Picture: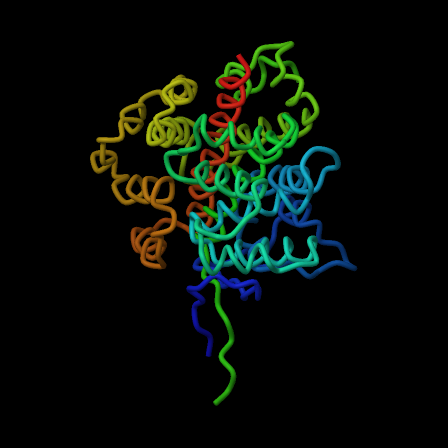
Length: 195
Length: 160
């Protein structure tokens, strides 16, 4: 048995699609290319197999995602994860929030920031810099986006460079995209222990 | 790519030589891939159930749901006979797209409230799973593009 997870957690749940993913045995050559399936690499997640239904989008989204989250320079990786987490909390994408809270905690070697965010939400106890980053990303994730001059000023007052601010805009916006796939196309589930 | 080939830079009004343009130049690969994503999501070779004009009209609608009229106009240019769908008060029922339009609106602006029934509702209307994924990619990409543009506008506002 499995149950749907409704509360924020750093323990990454299993993602269960609401549509039928592409079956590897029936995949077209274009899908196999986008999935980068080779004889030695045949493990593909249900999430990626679901997105393979729209192979043209998948092919451009994966490298874009990696560039925004991992390219060198600009904002630190942990702070980009904070931008991703803020958007995921606004959109209540439990799966995305778990993955990116976990990455943040591992990069920082500290769970304090994500603990307080999950316990207190927007009232979390954050230092000035994390507060400015989280508030900008949280407001930017609202629909319509609601970040304004005050949030931008707070980023500059907290000492962020223009390059760092751009990276925050990109990482939080990217999760406007990712949340609308993960949270819409599937459920975060946990296997129940056998009674 | 030149500056004028990027929708996000053009619509946000980022001008060459500005401080914001200097920052975006450090992420030129991301600006370029963002444009490739627009091409793939709005104008794919394999359209499935949603042709280019329908996609453009729905994109203009999502832009309007975030009050971005400049971006809406960018997409309306390609919406052809489907332009009526870009009006947020239009339900799409007359085009047989009532369920699709309601789904697009909810994914765009009430994301957190999406439930399994929303997907089941599309499937009950005979919409293929592949087309449901295509529709989600369209709305999801727009959410990203709208927020990149909004952020770039804010960066400039503070610098002038």
